[in-house]
Image 1 (cartoon, rainbow, N blue to C red):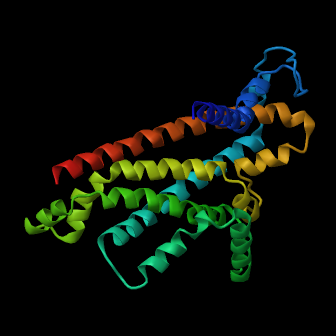
Image 2 (image 1 turned 90 degrees about the vertical axis):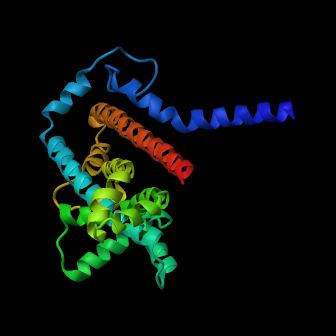
Image 3 (image 1 turned 180 degrees about the horizontal axis):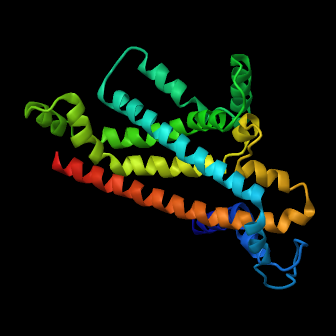
Length: 268
């Protein structure tokens, strides 16, 4: 038994090293003074990060990605709030089928989703732009937002809502003044995880973007030029750090939701 556990630990550690080694090597090579990505390193340098300041196309792509990430995460969170509220509070005909369709992008390959969206947009006669990417990313983020907020709404104490209605508030006032503040950690978590997903997403943006590329599409285009690889790795290092920070905030608010839910459960 002890030997089996030891082998299992070795396997898990080896798998994690294999999985996350590229993420560790990325910042190491981004500080390498040579353009050649190999060991041993030629020396320590930050010049590749400095080159990013002079890339106007990069700045435009970054701005496009930030706009798309903010809009799509906000739209997905808003729609997810309404969906989670309806699914947690009411029972209606076709509820399971509806929720299945909403959660479908979780299991549907992104390349299939991107091709389908592109086909629909072309049939509708819509030009590809940042707005079409916002629509695609909203569809992709919506299942994550729905699941996060569904957990938050399911753990609410319904007696608080009933007490508010008994004291004279209407349904909208109860939702705005009582329910919404209580699910604020879930809203923040949804916004953060949606922002990270949109900022890093490539496939749907590749299919739906027009003449204005997003940051992942820009990075992909730079990988075709060996001279651009070091600065691209420097950019990847920055994105990795930003993503880790945002995911840490998401985890923080997720734990707040759990503690708050446990407090509500004990108070029932």
